[in-house]
Length: 114
Length: 114
Image (cartoon, rainbow over all chains, first blue to last red):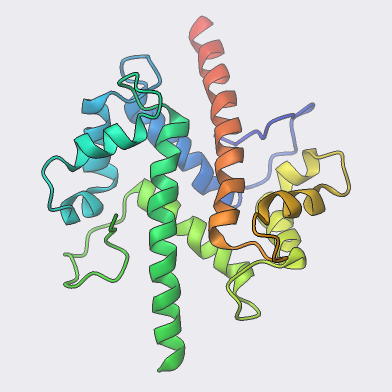
């Protein structure tokens, strides 16, 4: 599915999506793979748990706290409606990516020192 | 918050990264493909332009304003140091993803009405 950016007047010529466009498209399709099963388009607690167990299993396993998903649900559900919408979900992805990028930088610095 | 592909104390068994992990990894590697050329690990104006022209060309072409990159640079450079770090860059990705997800929802609703 080619990602049409906002404010498109006429469809752009079909070109291969870039790596960044593909990554952004994945954020949307992965979210809706779990959020749209019940047609709502948001994640309830069970759907969030399922998404994390399938898509962030390594991270989830590294969490010692068995209530990690419940705490993350509480953190993400900014408006307290018991659902996580795409905007709330993206904040999880951002937090994890920023944490990873800092480790990526450390890793690269160690590489250059060798 | 701790994620596997950060420096794990003991390496987890090698499993294929999920689609979401691959997307998050792409955000980091794409950013550093342009940000680390000069060894700084941040994007100056020229590097941001180069990233956008290569990775977000459709979006950039849809912007009528020739000074779009300069305005985006100003928006992203939250601390005004003339550089865009990963955290500032991710806010661009988030904004575009949220806008695209809204288009995706409209697209899906039209599909279900057919």
